[in-house]
Image (cartoon, rainbow, N blue to C red; front, top):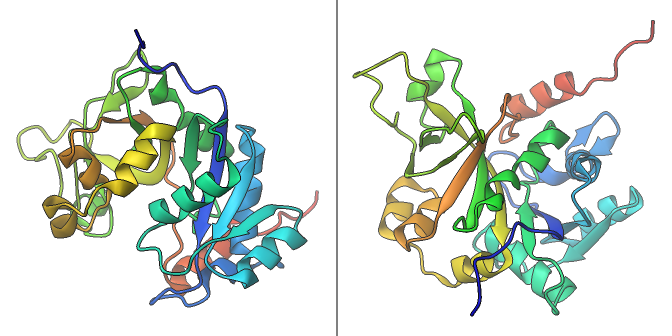
Length: 259
C-alpha cells in the first residue's frame, strides 16, 4: 500500500521568463544596476539554497544573459500560455527520471524576493495532503484591500505552523472585511511549490470558469479539488510590471554607500 507523500527532499527551482510583455517589453532583460532583472531573480533563488536553479525562457537572449552570469538556462517553446506550462516543459526535459520531487516556481519579475521567502514556500508541503504551496503576507496598506491588482487569499493562518489552507483567491477583498475589520486580509504572493505529480496534473487541466472570471490561474487547481496551502511571510516582494515598478526596483536594489 502506498502511503501519503512525504515532505519534499529534492526540490528543483525553475524561473519562467519571456520577453513579450505589453506594459514593459523586454522585461526580463531590463537593466538594474548593470545586470538584467532576470539575473537578480536568479541570484535570489540561488541564495535560498533549496536546490538547483534553472531559468526556463522563451527566447535565447534571456538564456545568454543568465549564462553570462554563471547560471543555467533552458530555452523552451515560445507558445506556452502560462509560466506553469513553461516550467513543466523544462522539468520534463531536465529531469525525465523524476529525481526532483518538488518544483518551486519563482516569477521572473520579482527581483527583490527574499531568499527566506523562497525557502518558506516549501513549508506547507510538510502536510501530506497539500498539493501546491504558496505564500501570503498580511495587507498593511488599507488601499491594497480594494486594489484590483492585489490578489487576496481567503484563509486562516495556524499560529503553530504559520500556514493555512487557501479556500479561495480573488481580486476583490475576501473574506468580506465589513463584519470584523480587525481581522487581517492576506496579500497573495505568486510563488508556488508543486509536488511533482501535482504540477503534471495541473498543467493537464483545462482553464476553469472561475480562473477565467478572476484571471487567476490558481483557481483552476482549487476547482479541480487540489489543495493549496500558504505560508505566512513578513514582506511582499516588488513585482515589476511597469516602467514605474522598474524604477522602484532600481531604488530598492541600489548599492549602498560605504561607511
